[in-house]
Length: 260
Ligand code: CAA
Image (cartoon, rainbow, N blue to C red; front, side, top):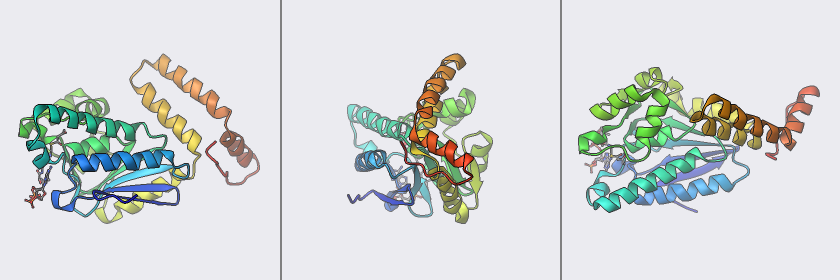
């Protein structure tokens, strides 16, 4: 299926989705959310894909937020529906059966930071800029940003970013624990693809279990989290990939995971 607002490609078990609305710095409109939603369904259904990378087409922006032109024409009810649509699509990233990495190459403002936060982790170019400037528009973040940012970097840092609407650099985002690695901009995609390649060499079944356990265990008490982990561990023990992985170790060879 071909898309107009995103570019979706797949190579070596890695799916790559690029936000692609260059005239609007890749801003998120209804069409983009619909297309992203469809692409994510394809990613989830494709047993060959073991990791997803999200980035922005062009050099300037990852995503400069929700499309303010579209937003300015919405009624309050349409705006609420749009916010819900964005939340649902970003939750779909969070609930994919494979890890998702955000490669933030430039502006990641508003919905752009929110898209990156829905991924499992973020690598950023040294030129990347993060921020939740919705307050400067008389709004608040509406695609899960108030929730995911506060959970990731703590409520007080999130409050300061949301209340001031001020942007932060990639280095500050790294210091906040929002970004795992800051790279020279020309090295960003190679660095991300190297990490994606390592993840893609692991089994899809255990990747899924690991992602689910970390996600489901994050907002519960430790004892409950450990029970969730224990159930999932039991299931991975029953997988073909676990038989293959342990046999390959003992036979001193590389495992061939089938994702079952
Ligand atoms: N929506 C629509 N168009 C956008 C856009 C957006 N979010 N961001 C940039 N554009 C457009 C600009 O209007 C401009 O279009 P024209 O050439 O037709 O004038 C083009 O992209 C290039 O942008 P600039 O000329 O502004 O480029 P710049 O280098 O001077 O500034 C920027 C870059 C700092 C990212 C600036 O464009 C900007 O501040 N953008 C808006 C960021 C923002 O407020 N995002 C939050 C949106 S609200 C949101 O996300 C809501 C939510 O959570 C639900």
